[in-house]
Image (cartoon, rainbow, N blue to C red; front, side):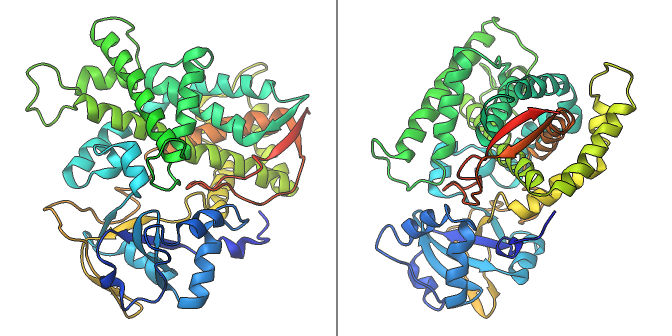
Length: 440
């Protein structure tokens, strides 16, 4: 793909945040902004610029250097940019840093979420979460994803299509079906999608639990989602509505029943709900954004689109007439895999990584102090292994299937040129990428 303007998106930086006293930041250059809110308003407003959060970072990097302090979304924060920070925090020794969600994410996802646990508890929950998202686990959902992609695209010709909205609906229907056998249409699906959108939009909000704020709406939507899950769990435990989905597996194999209260290998209902919501988030937001950016970048790079189309037409030509896409075919799309990887690199869907210090360390001559108090075995090393997005296999499968049917059967024209992004933690096109679609 073209590298035009990619210099704005290329720096890798790590967000390191904590809740300690600002006195520990005295020797680090930067500004903590206004009392209480810090620089949160500037931080959030910069999300909507074409370069997104990089605009916020680059302005301060030019003024203060590669390491600078600020205060955003209720946290005293140090930003570290450049290769040294990347190497130290991605490949440094174990226990140096741990995952650190913003307050909003902590409150919405709940304290027992995979994203808030560490050590052995994190490993245990990750094994459970990874079960339906493994390559073998995804295979049984392949035909559902394939059929849904075809049905979704059949509705595109003849109208203005907002790709981001369509991608969101598609990915949410997939993950809802995988987790709780939710049908792709109907009142339950609409309520599910409405609540999830409010939850998702609350992650980048200011942490004010005041009626009318995005944060408050997100908490209310989370509570409605949990009430829905309580109803489904109760029904299934009573012997009604049996389904072969992830929720059923958790209830049968891993949830605590009477007499299991002391069994640490089982999940409480609170843990069950927190991690189902975590799985929904993992299976939706990044995939929605990635699929939208793939289609946008393909539209902007005709030569790449034609080479991709050639790969998929070759796949078609090797089939018997009328045969549908197969599991083996979707796992043998080398150029498609390169397009997806380049999209993830160029779009930088998650533009930072939030961590807190578990040990004292130094970077560019500045001392970063650990967060106190620390609990034994609380922290894992920051790396691509233990903290890799659990939804990565699902994302690649959904995108590959969707793109196959899109490029084989349709062409599209963008209705406007706008590189702005939404004010959300996951980078998405602000205009939702409007297009018109025609059959080939």
